[in-house]
Length: 101
Image (cartoon, rainbow, N blue to C red; front, side, top):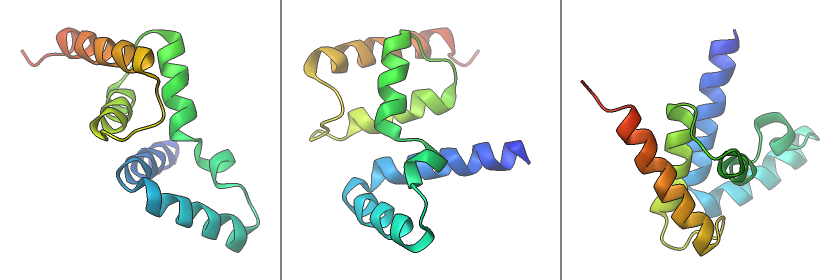
């Protein structure tokens, strides 16, 4: 069951990153419809990304793809320019350490 929940969370993170504007509408709809806070149930991708930066390294592919999705949006507002540079370095380091043999 925990693998299903983890997969669902990863899917939600990917969806939210790809459809940032749409996601704001969805989150408001979800909160109103269920009476629950979406980000308490599925964690805020921006908050997770900043926590990864603070930690200083990427632990797994899910974190790698989260940072990649954020940086692929040229109009992203999650990171400052200094944080963007750090994220790019972390992505590069992760790729070097996890390259295919």
